[in-house]
Image (cartoon, rainbow, N blue to C red; front, side, top):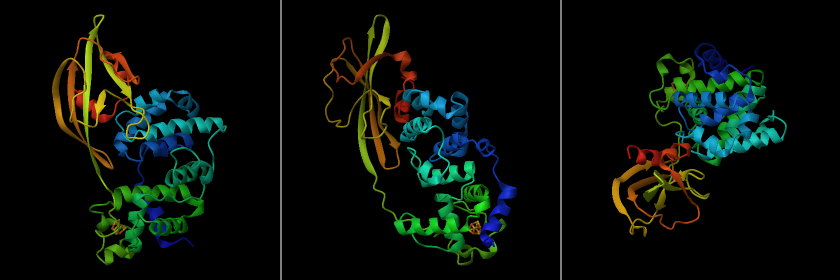
Length: 336
Ligand code: SF4
């Protein structure tokens, strides 16, 4: 006999499920793509990207055959670019293996696929009994069962994963997982959950002990690093067209593989370039998950090519839109 929680959750889902294009298919590629895009993106924005990807690369094989630059360009604006690079690598893994893995363990081996995504694909595409556990699930379970184990600890992860797995009906894994995702997103929301019209209200521990705002518990341990970037947008005229210097960002830091103008993180000295320096933007704040960037942006108009490291290339300014840029650079060059 299924737990009362499970029965109510499935009942709620039957009438409240969100209608989303990747919900209307069993195609693991479409489901995987939606899960990767939606990892740090809101549905409305994510859906437009999902549709563009599906239109441009309707199958995993076509995505695998694209270049990394093409994938990064299509991803532009979504942020967290490692997701796009992993997506591309995983597509190649899948093609090399002759198709999608059909089990949680097999899916977990794909680049960029963690426990949550593997469980989502395994259950929705292949009806495997693997419970999803993400922020929504932590919140719903912590509140309903009144669990105050911090969710960002090893013990918390174990506790909530085991509970979600225990509640999962093996013959309805897909519906139950999606019910949990939707319930957390539209009913039991972080702020102001809709407890007045909730099918779980009668037996909800947080509601009865007035701990809705205290649950789930999360330990504060995130350190935010502040950085100051000085960008120098070098441009000059050559054979009747305007050219600029950009380089691809190397590995080992944020925005790996994206393009940018000359950047110095030590802003105390100007680069040794002959030309006119114009400060166009100052202390532009750009917030990432673990970092806050403050950026100054200089335009340098010069008449001769300065000597730059080999990693730089010169391109016509009019072709800059063909290169994948961090969102910060897009903001900075806007209106030049
Ligand atoms: S009663 Fe409120 S807190 Fe409890 S599960 Fe429902 S929406 Fe969430």
